Length: 239
Image (spheres, rainbow, N blue to C red):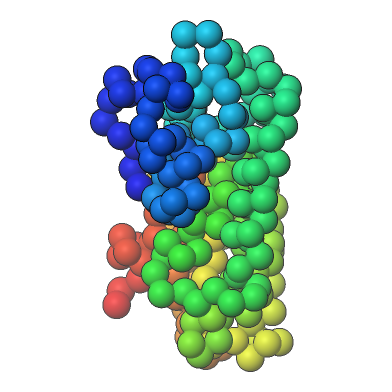
């Protein structure tokens, strides 16, 4: 998706004054949704602005104040309704659209997702896990082409080496004859910086995987809108 425009001076005019090809809805019809910025897509959902602020300016303000689409998705419905220029109807439309997008992303891992890079998994995981108030540890099993076989939650609550049972982590992988696994957990604080405990757990799982013949391919730590791959940081992973 394209980045936001630099500045919004051209959007202070009303939509009627804009060239037809620059209006979000007409632009989508002519060039497709991939040609639109986040604010233009949001403007189509919101439809109208408020006095002194057209719908694109309103969309840019909402994205700027709440940290983009990911941040906006975490704003509770009641709080969205109170935002200037939103209200209950727009808030409901926005929540519905974001939920559709979230469900589409979450439907991929169990169906057809092939993991070629940490981001392939991290993007849907951020949508699912970034707003959780407790730590969740997920285990993703993979076949010999790194295609996701299954994704399941193994633990809820603080994740540490004394809690995590190796047998529980690898149980589904053994049952499915999986070649590898990836584990992922969230930091409710929003900061995905791996802790010493995260590295310890990863080291133990790597060693257990060697004995079982099932590779631990990565450990992802999910934060608010971002993630860290322990393999990319070379934390616990030596190769």
